[in-house]
Length: 415
Length: 90
Image (cartoon, rainbow over all chains, first blue to last red; front, side, top):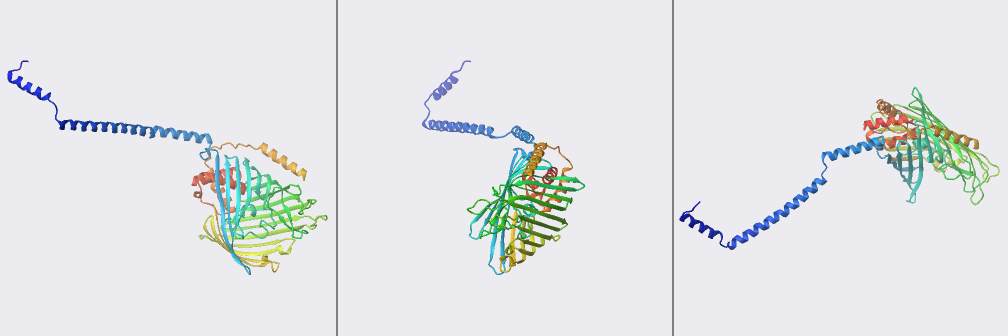
């Protein structure tokens, strides 16, 4: 294309203008724009980086499904959803606080205790259980005790083998009713105390136990065991057997083992009849003198429990006998025996439960004897939280604490 | 007494040998819940008030029922039924 003279002149002028140097304000604006562009580029890079990280951290639906599949497989491998890891641990226990006013003596908040219980279970095969007893004493110090610590192997549906320290299977109260939130009375029946009573409290040994159905609703349960057995406590003068130390120890001076057991029979589901017996040999171990020859020890007992609607009726008899030994520093043995019957009735539609209990304990020592009639009332805040108020009419040797009546108040809980 | 110990030890050994130490997993039993409800009512109240199934989690009930199997002389089947009832009601 050929340009005419006018067009050529305009083109020359524009070329000159374009090729001329830029003014100062134009340079500053360009630098500012360049800076902004660089800033935007940096921010863009940072945003991309953040986005990448988020992609890595965020679970997709596929990821969630994969986790679900893994959990499901783990449950199947364990055989049960609860036993995916095969092992279970559990903390239970109970506590109580009480007030006692014994006639003619000081009243006090004298019963404060906490009993934590630890369980460890492995599959359906093994259960380890232990209970501690922590009590506050008169000096304000804490006393610790090991109520039991034993291993149980569930061999089959009808037999469990056990070993360790366990509550005595002789009788029913000690093993099943002694926890404060279960016992309907603030105190234990006469002769069922841990010290100086007529009832074995615990033992260290091994045995078997279980339940057996007989059809038509009938059932039996049994316990058979071997243990170290009790020891004998001498009086202060050292010439009488003061009491039978019935809590399980790691030794028995007589070097004999106790063999015992209990058989319970339930002809109908709400009635249980039990018979208990144990036999061993015990020996006096005077302080600073050799252990004496052994002598017979035996305990027999019978118990029953019956429930009908809100009525709970139960009773127990127990007799412990230590034989005589002419050559001993304490030649006379003796018989410690006790029994009690208790009736409790949960008033329908209420949280109130009156309780009536009668018990009698006799021993070779008159100052230990006690005949007791107790009347109380329980208020159940919940099934495992109870407040108890009771009055004991105690009849013992005049002048002894056993002869003073008591008012008892107790608050107990189990968990 | 020594003879008695020997008899006791022998009996225990035989019983344990006869026993199966690894209880087989039972297939789901549709009647377990109903049997468990009855066994729960018959056995738990023999000593204490019956507890609400919601008082504990399922895994806690597992251990508690094992403990009560020892205390109450329950059979293994009764324990499984009661557990099925408690967990099914929770």
